Amino acid sequence: MRFQAVVVAAGSGSRAGVEKPWAALAGVPVLRWSVRALLDAGAADVVVVVGPHRLADVGDALAGLTGWRAVEGGATRAESVLRGLDAIEAADLAGADTPVLIHDAARPFLERAVIDRLIDALGDADGAVPALPAVDSLRRGDEAGLGDSVDRDGLFRAQTPQAFRLATVRAALTDWPGETPPTDEAEAVRAAGGRVVLVAGDPRLFKLTYPEDFIMAEALAAGLTPPSVTRVGQGFDVHRWGPGTSVWLCGVEMPHDRTLIGHSDADAGLHALTDAILGAMGDGDIGDHFPPSDPQWKGASSDRFLVHAVQRLAARGGQLVHVDVTLICEEPKIKPHRQAMRERMAELCGLRLDGVSVKATTTEQLGFTGRGEGLAAQAVATITLPASR
Ligand SMILES: Nc1ccn([C@@H]2O[C@H](COP(=O)(O)OP(=O)(O)OP(=O)(O)O)[C@@H](O)[C@H]2O)c(=O)n1
Ligand SMILES: C[C@](O)(CO)[C@H](O)COP(=O)(O)O
Image (tube, rainbow, N blue to C red):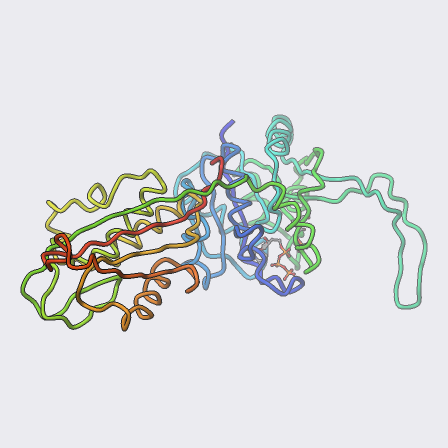
């Protein structure tokens, strides 16, 4: 059954000391783990609720995923949930009876089986909550020491996502009578007279709360991260020399007594590199993405071609590992500009400097480069891609 989802990610993480949704697990933001799980399990839309200062970051964290929208959260978790529900209502994404799953971004390891149990249970209840029975013995205690035992029979640890029908949970939160906000939606729905049932939770669905929780989460994430494959792509480009006073190479403009002729800025180094990255992804070539027949690329800075390829790689969950460009020309001399070129390419590619190489060679005055008719560039890019998805 299709369902809507709200992922609350607007907390400050005061106990963890970090804004948990933005921390990385196996290199992937916690928020992405949570949202991806819901989308993979069939959520029609996921409303992501974030702090106002994070609205601009959501696109990067969720690059390549479709079916989500971001809204601004509130001062409490309950307020954030309500804003997410309001967004579903405002965008007319669901009817009053549509199931909505409300989930803490800070619980990144959500299995589809939990979602299936929740949706099934919602058939004849007003709400469903995944929970685990308390297994350790429970004691009261304070500074003075250990107090009485608490009977753990019938005690559960509530998790998220929690499932309700849109109108039920929205009304319950809007009409919440308490002075302090409800601890979760189940509490609000119960207070409104609803029947909330328990379904089996999942130990992996623990909430990141304290710094030490990240140790276990990192281990789990490593085990769940699909193995990556490493690929190498190569690119080659040539431009003809013509009259001019400067030339662009590898993202750097340098004075020269001629320039390279081309539809864009004719930066053969960046063109070869863009093709190398696209080639490693099996994603066509620079001409497919930026046709020379298209007037909008006339005189364009080649920076944008390279950034486009890097972004397409990121959208597929891939990573650029290393790039290596060789410029083939008699003139200009490349060495004085090499460091600036590496720094610029590192910036454009999001790589460390030691992952970026620029080399140059002459062809001993042989061939078209040797005769000074044109400049050639070749590039190699190493990338990793998730082995699946
Ligand atoms: N105003 C708030 C407070 C919390 N949350 C979200 O609610 C979930 C569970 O809350 P909690 O673990 O309490 O997160 P924080 O509020 O970030 O942490 P802390 O209480 O330690 O400050 C988290 O995904 C958190 O981002 C939210 O969206 N809006
Ligand atoms: C909603 C919740 O995750 C259910 O366990 C929890 O109540 C929210 O987090 P907090 O630690 O209680 O603030």
